Length: 321
Ligand SMILES: C[S@@+](CC[C@H](N)C(=O)[O-])C[C@H]1O[C@@H](n2cnc3c(N)ncnc32)[C@H](O)[C@@H]1O
Image (cartoon, rainbow, N blue to C red; front, side, top):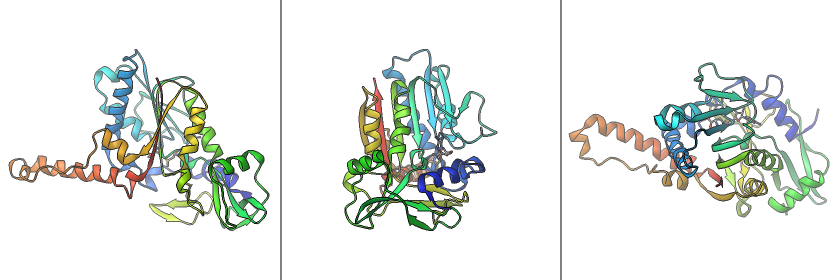
């Protein structure tokens, strides 16, 4: 059975007994959420800024899309100061079942609220939105099809017109053998979030590339038990591909009246006070326990802003005032 990658990925991740309906992401790879509570603390500062910009309304939303085990939503909620927490409406959105230990004050849903006033965060969601893969041939792009049981590939038909237009605009392939992941479903997924944002900010954080640096052979990858594996879409592993965040940004802008910033996690977190600065060495003598604690925190901050690791992730920030 040969399937286009988008169908194969959809079935493998979200179909009957699919990977994400069975497994929690933290068992298989290390996201910023898993790496350190510093990430949730920084996003709490972002939420406080959004709340202030909205004039501290009676109700403010925090929406975590692709929430996994809900740890980010739970971490931000737990750390929120009383004046905010009393007004906070928290929704964790995922296709997986509600995690058993999620605090009751966090709603669990398969789709985001219809109208959002506040902050939306989608950390490593878009890279798991299924995409088709195209390969350039002397006759133009063709879809790559895959045998889900082996991962073996062969070329299928030409992509549909809307996908060809997307490729030409966002990821033009020139030489035969080049490959591209067609990001149109991610653009649509992001636009479906942006359109629900009545007032506030929506942030997507992900492995990303831009038009001036697309990887010529794509980025399709599998993950299982903390290791990269061949992307065989049989439901046994995560299947992911980096995100054309600039295309998602344009799709968000088409929903109207948003301002856009595209940056790296390193820059975004530094602006939120995450610097990785080590404590002064003489604190080791005056307050050894405090020094060790500050040192551990500096190392976690360092991991989150490492330009060759999580710090190199893209941040798409769209604001509707
Ligand atoms: C890589 S995990 C990220 C988990 C968490 N945000 C973190 O950073 O640790 C991606 C999550 O997105 C969820 N997901 C994928 N497509 C979705 C959709 N259309 N709606 C809601 N959740 C989705 C998956 O079920 C999975 O839990």
